[in-house]
Structures are given as structure tokens and as C-alpha cells.
Image 1 (cartoon, one colour):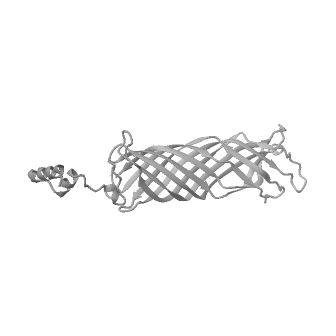
Image 2 (cartoon, rainbow, N blue to C red):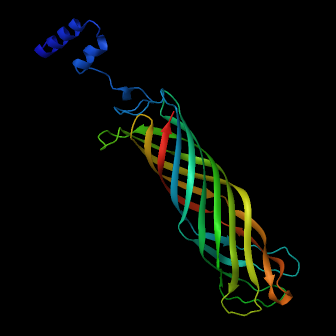
Image 3 (cartoon, helix red, strand yellow):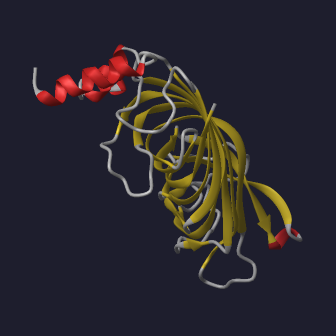
Length: 286
């Protein structure tokens, strides 16, 4: 036994109230809590056993990918048009989201329910409408839109894994990384206003696309959390959100030659909608 070890034992014994754990601490033999699954690595934040639940509240800029419309003939009587390779581009949008999670004790597994509200404005719509097979004249020049909006409200189940980040973060009590897949449904509300050709013909048809529907959604998430204290953390993360193709049905058309009356236009169906969400906010453990 070295001199330092002997001194530690003597000091412990003389204290009377010290236990064996204190001796191991003095000798540098204490076991890190991180060696138990689900318990943080040498950090000051709560373990899964102490605080299994957490709530994330974040704000997010959103980048929605282009939407490509598939060719689909109209079922409406008297017209047989289709958008040919229509493409929709969005501006950078904003959103807020909420995540309720559960950390399974003695494991690295987490279970999450994720929802939010996200908006992107329509930047540009381009596409062609092929002439009617019945011979009804219609301009085949590219069509453009005045604007529009995309609103999305996802409700997703997100299982995943949780691991601790290495220590030493300035002013922080440790960190966690989480990642996993997501699946569920999304409320998708898309509107595109005043789609018309560039000819400027006052008698040209004006098209409007509007659809509100629940669609199957899927994606993945990656989160980093940096703890201020035992139960509060800064959250920085990324969420990928995608939907299945959406059928819009017959879009409405305003016909200036009929006093602006609305008539059924071509059926519309889009490919998958993709949205990239970069999140920043706070998490609370309880």
C-alpha cells in the first residue's frame, strides 16, 4: 500500500461516518455512472432513471423541396387537359415544433411523439398545359403563378437511440446526441394562386390549385442537446419530413369568357413533398 493510499484509509476511518464509496472516491476507484446503460457519461444532467420524460420546444427555418406534378388526364366533361411537367418551388419558411419523449431506463432507446406547424410560401410555379384532345384551343406556353402557401402539421412517432457526448463543453453540464426514423401522418394544405400563361391574353383561363388532406409521412431526425443544468438543455437539431404523393383532384378554373365562372380543370397529382427543418430551442427533463 502506498503512502497516499494509507493516508486515505486513515482519514476515512477517523471520520467515522464515511462509507466504502468515500474510500473508493479518495483512491480514485469510483465507477463512472456512464458504465450503466441509460446513465449519462460524467455529466451533470439527469439520468434516464431520475428523469425519463422530456419536452422539446423549438423554432425552425424550413426549406421545402420542389414539388413535381405528374401528368394526369381530367375526368371533367368538355375538357381533357393535363399539366405537363409542372414544377413548384418554395421560399424558405418558418415553423415551430413540439416533441414529447421517453428515455427507457437501463437502455439507450428513446420513444418520441413529434408535431409542429410549418409554413413555406410559393416562390414559383412553372408548367405547360397540353391542348385538349377535343381540339379546344388553349395556350401551350409555360404557365406561372402569382404565389401561394404550403402549410404542414405533422404528427409523427419517432423511436431512436441516445448516446452521451464527450465532456468538456464550455459552460455546459454535458451533452447528448439522439437520432432515429419517423413515421406518421401530416396535414398538408397547399394553395397556388392565379396560374396563367405569359401571353397576357385577358381572355385566358386562370387556374387555382387548392388541397387540404392528411397524407402518410416519414422522415428522420438528429438532435444535439447541451445541458445548462440537471434538467434544462439547449437543443439543436435537424428533421427530414417527406409525404407520399398527393392527389389534388380537379383544380378550379376561372373562365373570363363565362363571366369569371369557376369550372373544373385538369386533375392534379404531385410527387412526394420533401421538407428540411433545422431546429433550435430548449428541452426540459422531468
